[in-house]
Image (spheres, each protein chain N blue to C red):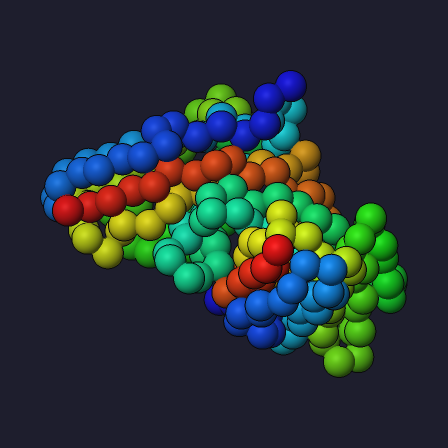
Length: 115
Length: 112
């Protein structure tokens, strides 16, 4: 089937607002990753889920960022009180397992612009 | 924290020429992956090379890994305009973490 999908593809919001970004991984993939990418930079790790639990959230920049994956498939990245510095492309990836030796499949990303 | 760093940051060549990109990393790894990204959106996996492998091929791509020098190279032979993209290496974060971490990438432009 389908690859990793992310919605919305673009999101423009005002400073201080709350946003949710959604990721639909490939069916059957237990590992899910969120990355953030700024212009001219590589993807920066945010959080990693193995099943329903956040196995590693060490990349979340602060407590305004939160992510869930309640049923072990779809994940939502939530950003509270957005700041202009949050503007970036948010990438989601999934892999069959989270051992690091599996290929990651990336979604097209959500471009977030905070005005 | 970033593990791998690609070199050069930018590369401009003519169609038909070969393109070589390098990746250096800091700590021991069990594998290294190369990805391609078009237009700043989703990344596409190209190749994974394990620490016990020295060279791997996939079509016009050749990847080498030198664990003693903590470096890898990606060679694209007979390049095409469609190869224009950013190329990233990804290595496990280290410290017991298997999470792939990315460098800043090499921006390749292939002129027709």
